[in-house]
Picture (cartoon, rainbow, N blue to C red):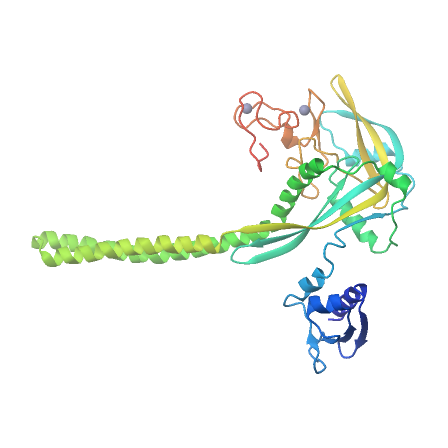
Length: 398
Ligand SMILES: [Zn+2]
Ligand SMILES: [Zn+2]
């Protein structure tokens, strides 16, 4: 509870309260009126964080809505920040060696042309997701982009974020801002963040969904087994009544028995359908994603200009090497993030170059059309196959 007590003391002090630690596990708080009103506290409040509390102390814990209430004191403050990090190696070493590991172009050749030391803007976004079905799963997702090169640098951003904890807060200088280039506009932000966020959240909740499906299958099997047994027994009885009826030449009693049994079968079927509806409702999945925080981090980079050649065409691409974490960012997939494998490792740096416009795309974005088998570039044809017009559906990598 010491951590929670420290957090609460800091929050309250930032909001103008005088806070004193008292034992055991307590705080005495003299809060300004705004804070008192928001939390419904007396002028001098005693807070208790442990099992042993002083008399009259307000119990504070992780359960209940305390964290939400303290969070509400901040309003929208702390949602957005910008910082600069400096330092790191002053040279990336031999760019050709970096690229041998960091860029895999099976159908093109490349040559490192130039390396420039500059700064870039890393856009780091935090989202909270809540997946709710018969159980609940909550968590955070961080995304990271280099706004100058467009690269998805979620892995690099995670490492940079860890370094932040040991660094003094440094505001970006005007020169660094200029070097880092403009901020993304709303449309670019939306086009880049939305698909990456979708993929990330899907990835995060995949184990939760698998476990949910297993529970659903188990329940469905049980419900089916139970009603199937009942129905079979009834159908057997019906068959027996039919036989007995034929042998005895019909009769009112047999008719009545048959009708009763038929009604039983209908009732069992109705109940089975109702139980399936219950299961469907119980296991219906709702996923909510909420933006929590944006950090714009200005960091030094070594920018590699790389010349790419495919047949008779050539073009220049840029990749940043991040000296603070000594990592080269992955090349952008110009057909969009849904084609680029977001899983760590395995081919994330492999790109194919298209014949017509030398787009740099993940292999899945230059694969054959599943309908007519023509290979085509999804960066140039993002909506449908150019030969047979088969549409490219959202969420699939066809
Ligand atoms: Zn292309
Ligand atoms: Zn086609």
